[in-house]
Image 1: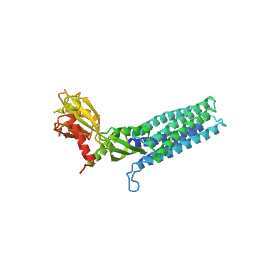
Image 2: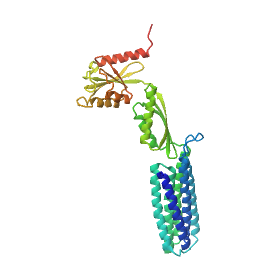
Image 3: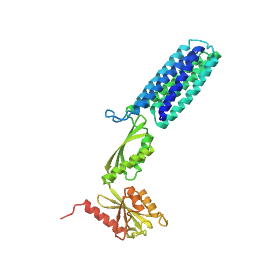
Length: 408
């Protein structure tokens, strides 16, 4: 049995026992407050049973008529629990007001007080247990039931204070405490109703989770921008819609990118049921190239024969519209002197610089460098040119040839 269902069943059993004991002792001792608290606990038994039913319904597999599942059954149950909490608060207010005009003496106050205190302790433990399991399982109905039970601790405390006050001769203490407790109960009911209605109306999830999803997607290699992001809760599950852009032209690689984004989000965000990702091609304004060099001498720098052992990497940006060189800089290779894995480390460095293409004199096919770059969707090309300036001239010439109409 799953933890949330087990917690709900434990709640039903414990609350039923407490309700029976409080009713018997309250009747025998003449404590109206304890009898009222027993009836109040009986409503908790009903609400906890409703949670079990809601969890059972929400676990049903989607059907043709309900293709998105029955997850919101939990939120419907939570809303029902909120109404019960409002009703319980209303009953406490009525009972407290009526008791202001009464001066009934409890015949066995010590026994009644003992049961009230035991009920208070058991209710606090049960509430903490349900809230912990509900938050771990992200179950809105169990969290609502835990808050309902937490609200009951105030009622139990008021009953204990009322019995003690009756024993000491302060007959108005119980109804005054009852009215005060009802305010906390109404507040708890409002919070549960508010959260349930938001989910039922498909409101967005909290900003922190939404921002984390955006970060995960944008940090994935191959994703250029996040155009839109939507996420909503349904029961304890989350449904996400993403619209991203990429410079990938290959349809298969773009599909693989979507799978990677989905995998990363599901590994970090709990209870994500479904992610719909729409991928748009990015219209690149600038292409970024990297070339391994033996020196830092501007365009006259010679291209290194070995990728990992290169002293520098020349990184330059060229506009795709007119082939203009917008930026050129040299990055010192801090891994050139390593005996092992220098190519791998250098490749990871270039990935962090978000380059689009690597131009080398040596082939990197089937080497660790290739797999690092390919995993980041970075293209590579082997050249027989000697200097950075020649590479830049070739790139500009190819862009002009592709982007401008040729005369006669």
